[in-house]
Image (tube, rainbow over all chains, first blue to last red; front, side, top):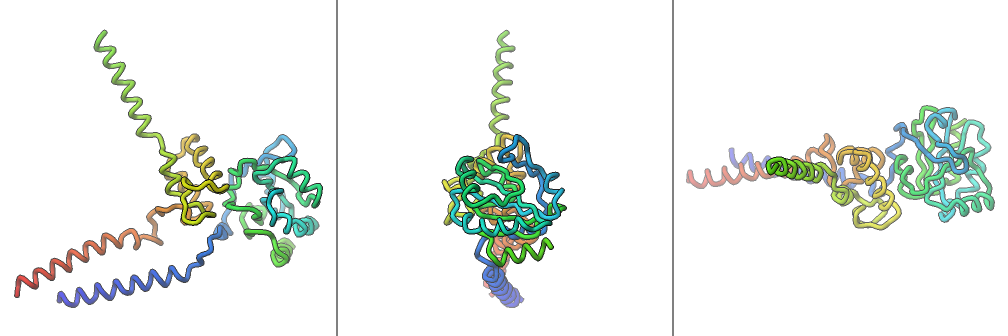
Length: 172
Length: 121
């Protein structure tokens, strides 16, 4: 009887260890926040870049689709994705909301003057704390949301040509 | 008069004790938060941009009167359980939480059976 208990305990322990390794090793070790896809964003309170007003979820509900793009003039990869954002501005069903992240206003304006302004609306997050509400941990990051403020896709890093095609297919 | 003064000091002392008991230790929270862009550092230990922003957010939420649990829940909702070093007990990780206790009890049972068997011989 005792031998049986010891044997079963050892077998259970081995199964448990194998199970832990199996689950652990099958998990992606690259951290991202793409699990936010499908969730609704709320409590949006973004300071408008130029006007004295706050951008809230009511502003975003007016658009069929909104691409919220977090960028800064000091961010190299943001320059890389900028031409794609300008092309995305041509999409009728898509509005672009830029969030200028931890940046100097004058530098941001110079950046947009040099490379063009793709944004329908521009907000400012001087301390970066509003970006936490969007699960942002580095820039550039972009979030595609629909009318109901549900996250359809999250782009970590600069938007690529493939991402551009994806966005076009979704918003058409 | 003397009694009134004593009561006054007792009340003041009681308030001070209460204030310390109920205030949230921001450092404790920050130490339990993982800096997602660093190599094995907590938010408390890191000076990265991300860590500095999280520090501001945690401080703001404490000032707004949020509890420790509410702060963790907010950050877990945004960044997943990976952001906390000590994840909350739930259906996904309950085995990991319970395993040490199960191992302890099973070990005790095995040792008990082992000694019982030896005594019988």
